[in-house]
Length: 318
Image 1 (cartoon, rainbow, N blue to C red):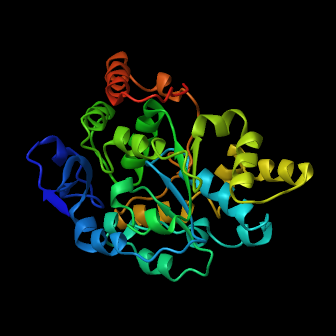
Image 2: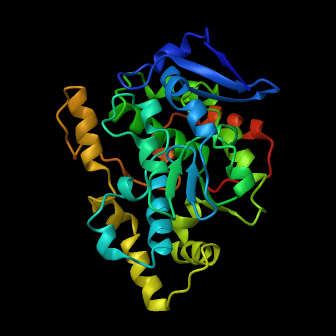
Image 3: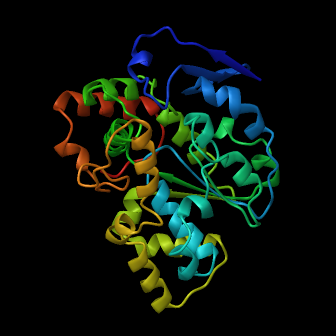
């Protein structure tokens, strides 16, 4: 089913970090244009078992390209799906309520077996993944559970991904090198264009809800109502207002059940780095158009060309 290619391009080596290295290009044998860049550890550990994973109709999946509002979407979906259970949400880590399917394949020394946690979740299971459509479990497309996909404009995504990769993965390269690997589809989980296009093309299916990060920033209440309708939930206006306060970016950033502070501490301890919350937080700025303050004119032009190359009918909001 898959071709596994070890790339020769030296740019791939620039992406090696203590947690993610030895990148390979995974492609479909019958459609080589469908490919994804992942560490060899993902191939060894997760590729086949995820493809063959048993899926249930009452599963609720959140799928995104990295740094597109995943955590924010997860908390929104979990809260709505669990009838606004604030007590549990404030006592149980989001990563335990909504685990990350392929985490062990990209962080081999992670102390929990996340695949086992996902398959053993009490139903209905809430599962997160960054995998592209063709690497997700085959049964997703026959059983058809609910899937929420969140997209974000590539310029802000690339900047956010750089800070994540630098501070959590130990990346030592420059932001210029990072943007080059991003637009050349060398980055882990690349290519972003294909990742988004594949879900955009199936957005009309009744079990798919396609959201934009920018819409969540501009009108969170509107997006909450979309998810409510999708999950067949109905809340009062006061309940919706309270939920939007809980989901405000400022609240999410401070919420220790959501902001992954303990994960960051653990990963940095493995590198022998002292955690400094003033320097880096997992939920960073969450701005629309924040790339304008961080990227050079040349980098922005490279990303503009990358977006044009996608040739799809999404008009990203900047």
